[in-house]
Length: 323
Length: 174
Image (cartoon, rainbow over all chains, first blue to last red; front, side, top):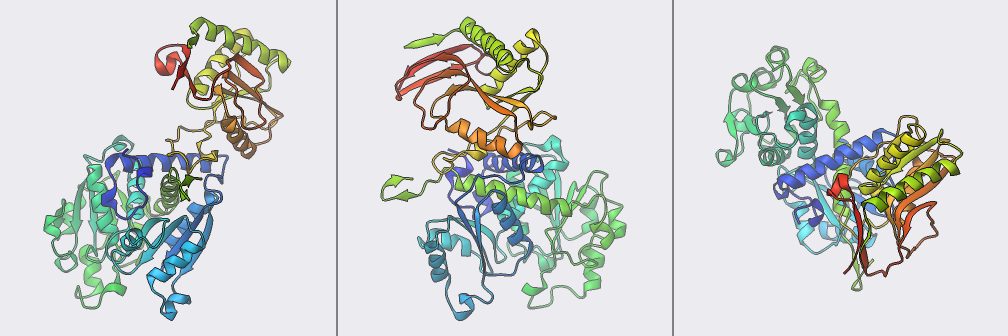
């Protein structure tokens, strides 16, 4: 059956069909309606344990998953590599098996290596469900889902298909797992996607992606319905990709002049954390078109939906009987 | 066994239940109806219409209990259909839960959990179209359309005009 529950894990945006994406987004909306109303906290995942396994720094994603799990009454264990057994040289396998022995039902993993989540899911080391919360420069599917959710709330006429919407993703595409997951998800939803970046920040082989490519932000700007500004990930840059910060901001930043050229109904998005004055000006970030804080709010709902749908209908076999 | 209730039977049952609700609560001033999706909502609306014809208009809401079930890991998650609580809330009210079939009682247990998070009603009562027995919890209905003794391998199929295009209850053996 083509439902989210038929999958054990959420590893990549490419694993999700259109109907599964809509199932996640519809469930998130309903969860939002319930928890904004009379029931702040739901008992749905009572007795289940969600482990946040973070080998890489993160504030908002970890808090968002933690908050989502707690609103559904799951128990949450946070594990961050810094100051843990990992810094003593423990490998992914031993860490994962330790968490398994502690009774994790679902592991949310962030790792600096691409494919870490998939390795964990396919290794047989653990029987828990795995959610990829960012693996290197590869993928970050729940970010793409919350972005799609945010776009959907602004364009209700595009509820079941994004065809007719033009989404621009601007900046450090090369290092961006957010861009990769978004391209996969938005294309499944039927949107037209344009990647905009200097040639040095375009990934190798980008010509084969199902998207348009532009090196000129001003060309695409006036036709965009949503513009996603990506953070310049200086921590992943070991060489020089553009001459100077000021030149980057002038050519590819969403500054005050470009802000006025956006369509009336267009929205500004950013996965955070922002470098104000670099890829986005303070006026753009705080503009009424900015959906950046909505993205944070929506992230909790989308992650609640993913936890609920993955943990539901996945009985754990115990000695041959279903418990 | 075949068809056990036809359209006219369902109609009469719901009309009688409406009268019983008025009688039991000495009027329906503080009564609200909460239907449990899917068919409980349809039944709640019909009872609401009868009550309006007999007495006066009262609030009818819906209560989706999916997120309060205790068998999440056993069954695939159902799509959420939505909870709509009438604007006056439920605190201090006489809440009548409406469902189509009462069986194990687990749905009602989940509904009671959900209600306790929404407020503190004066009373919670239960109206069902069919009580088929086989309770697994100490739960009993206050208003019953028809008691139908069944075997646990039989299936009680309730169909209603608004959802299924026809009004009837039948028993199928699986």
